[in-house]
Image 1 (cartoon, rainbow, N blue to C red):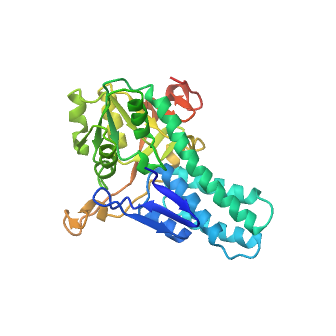
Image 2 (tube, one colour):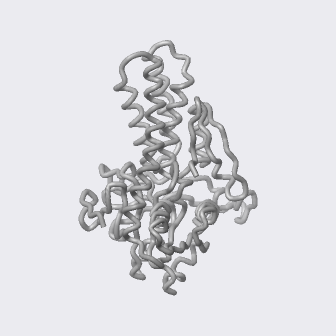
Image 3 (tube, rainbow, N blue to C red):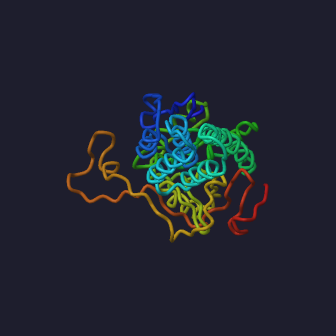
Length: 339
């Protein structure tokens, strides 16, 4: 299921806020539409956020009425500045914007040639994402054995990417190799991406999945019900993995129970120039915690803490799966072994 498409100056996305009850497709026509879609989580997931931002710049280039190249470059810089403010934690957003802007700066010629180069770069990035996920899945499948039950947290599937997925891509690849795999999906409070999105896409693809609340992780591990854990990532720094809130809990419990904990993420998620001390953790609206949908579940006036991500030290990570191979943290993230 391709989650984002370009068609002659219009980007079409699936509004992930509506799933699983409704499959609503939304048409975006300018970078402001795209900035709203990213900020409000119509699109989400680090790889998809990156490609979406690239398409936001493509929309700017395609619809520009600039007469000269320099004027279009200014419009692209303005759009890039807005898009950078949408989500602070996922590094793919900034990587994608930097890549498209670099392509724009390097492109010589007319305004029309510049616009074409920007649009083409965004489309190339979208196609690359699918290929990257398939390569990642193939490497990761080597870590999954026939008959395994794999736990995952949040949604790192086709809905978090252009298609196929990162963590769920590993599971898909293992199944494509003929392995019988079952999945345990944590619900992922407060926005419930595991319940709403992971369960939706796995059931759609006839992959056996069981939903649990986040508070059940320790119990199901203690009962021997989990063989491996595979999650995605929003940013991987030199000493830690930044991913959806609750990931750290799962990693610590996996270590306590001797369960391998794997992270699947493209190289674009690597941010080896920083450590966890530099991390910016997005703080989202208190209503995500005080409400479930439109129904309030907490008393009025309660103080709320709502970080969207947490930090998992690499000591809890057995392997990082990328499109370039499998990296073992004890070897350093710059070294890999292709298991």
